[in-house]
Length: 420
Image 1 (tube, helix red, strand yellow):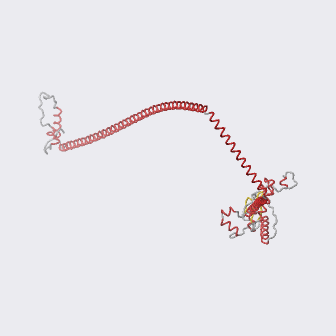
Image 2: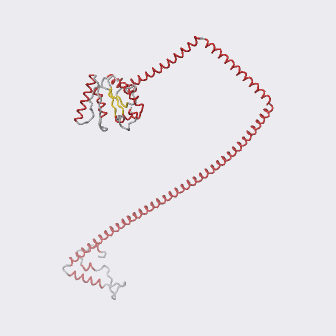
Image 3: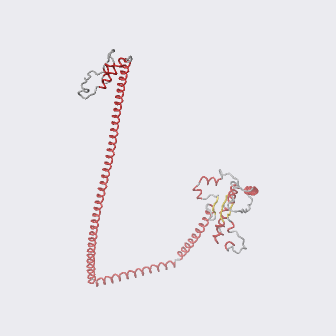
C-alpha cells in the first residue's frame, strides 16, 4: 500500500513478512530515536502472523492485492478525472478570456466609432463655422461694395447735376447773349426791314389784283362766247340729260339685279333653316350640293322617320304625307296645314320629313323673329314669298311659333303693325 505496488511477493511469502517493514526500528526504552511509536506496527505484524497461521492467509493476501489494485485504478481514474476537469477549466478560462477579449474589442470598436463620430461632428461643425464665417465675410464684403457703389453713384449724380447746372447756366448765358445781339441788330436794321416789308406787300397786292383782273376778263369772255353760241348750249343740255338718264338707269338696274340675285341665290333674313342650296353651301360642300340640285343619289324617305306617335295620330299624318306627295305629283294646289302641341313633340321633324317625302324643298322661320320687325315685317314677308316662288321643286314653308304674331284683329293688346 505504501510503495509496494511495484513489487511482486513471492508465492511462499507469509502475510507477516508482507506486513512487517523492511527496516523496522529496534525498540529501546519504549521509544525510537525519531519519537515514532512502533507498537501499532508490532500489533499489525502480530495480527499478520496470526493470519499466516490461519488457513485463509493466501486468500487474504490476494484480497489485499486486489484492493490495492482497485485503489490504484480508482486513483488513476481520479487523476484522469482531475486532468479532464483541469483541461475543462483551462478551456473555460480560454473561452472566458476570448469572450473578455471580444467584449474588450467591441468596447474598443464602439469607443473608436464614438470617437470617430465625435471627430466627424466636430469637423462638420468646424466646416459649418468656416462656411458661416466665409458667408459673413462675403456679406460684409458685398455690403462694403454696395456702399462703395452707392457712394460712387451719389458722387456721379452730384457731378452730373453740377455739370447740368453749369451747362444750363452756359446755355442761358449764350442764349441771352444771342438774343441781346439779335435785338441790337434788329434795332439797327429796323428801318431797312420796314422798307423791305412795305415793298413785298405792295408787290403781292399788285400781283393779286393783276390775277383777279385777268381771271375775270377771261371768265367774262368765255361766258359771253358760250352764251352767244347756240350749238354749245344744245350739246351741254344733251350731255346733262344723258348723264341723268344713265345714273337713273344704272341705279334701277342695280336694284333689280340685286333683288334677282337675292331671290335666286341668297336666303331671306327670316329663314333660319332651309333645304335649298345657297352659294355659301355650294362653295363649302360642292358634291352634296350638286347631288341635291340634280336629285342624284337622293331617295324619298318616310315622313315619320324617328317620330313616335299614337296610332291614330300616326295614321292620320301618314295620310297627309301621301296626299301631299300625290298633290305634288299631279301638280294640284296645296292646302295649308296647322300643327299644334307642346314643344318637343316632333312638329318640326314632321315638316322636314313631309318635305323630303313629297319631293319639296322646305324653309323654317320663327314667329318670334317677325314680331320685333314692326313696320318692316310686311316687306320681309314679301321678300320671303318672292324667294319661295323661285323654287323649281316647290317649297314647304313651316312657320314655327306662329302664335307670336298671328293674333285676332279684335283684341285690344295687338299693335297697329301686327294688325296691318
